[in-house]
Amino acid sequence: NAGVTQTPKFQVLKTGQSMTLQCAQDMNHEYMSWYRQDPGMGLRLIHYSVGAGITDQGEVPNGYNVSRSTTEDFPLRLLSAAPSQTSVYFCASSAPDRDETQYFGPGTRLLVL
Amino acid sequence: AQSVTQPDIHITVSEGASLELRCNYSYGATPYLFWYVQSPGQGLQLLLKYFSGDTLVQGIKGFEAEFKRSQSSFNLRKPSVHWSDAAEYFCAVLNEGGTSYGKLTFGQGTILTVHP
Image 1 (spheres, each protein chain N blue to C red):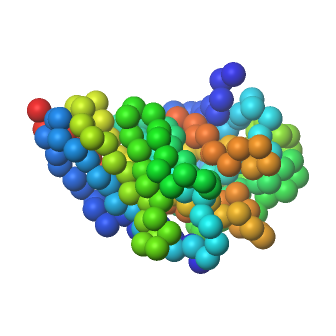
Image 2 (cartoon, rainbow over the protein chains, first blue to last red; image 1 turned 120 degrees about the horizontal axis):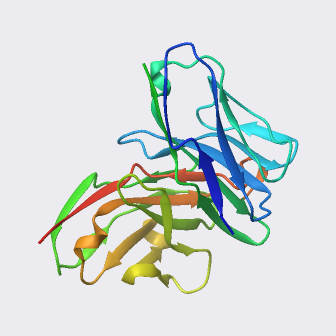
């Protein structure tokens, strides 16, 4: 199993550009989520999904969109990037009915100029 | 709402010394608690977790943590620190019920520096 994979590893955007951060997992996990990590603030939940077709907002959802068309994939979209979205983004997945542990991807480092 | 506090932003210890990282949580029910470690430029790796049962849990890399309900704490310990333990450590609590099911709430993190 590859676990949780994320692409790209690093991205530079200009203000106003759009992009999609990809996340995939091969563990058949129902639950997937996106976090952003900023210095001194830990990880904050952006959006999450409890299954294909079901998504909901987390703590800091503004400026981000998500969709979940398959169990495996959970892309995060930035429609119009802002410097405040400069951060490291982590995707995670879990199977709450089997194991409460969330497994994290390696992260995407995003710089918005 | 649930919250997690890690009072120490940065801790420095000498190699071979003992370590304790503090974590306090606020949660209405019996919490599911986790400690994750993040090496520089890396993702998060699970060190250990507490769901129920024995309040002293063992994890990987020689770490252990003790759940104390009366103090709302879940402190991480290691008897003898190695230079490779230098990293950032995160405590987290899992939401179990309602619309927050499956959400993790993280503390701010503690950066560990190890001196030779």
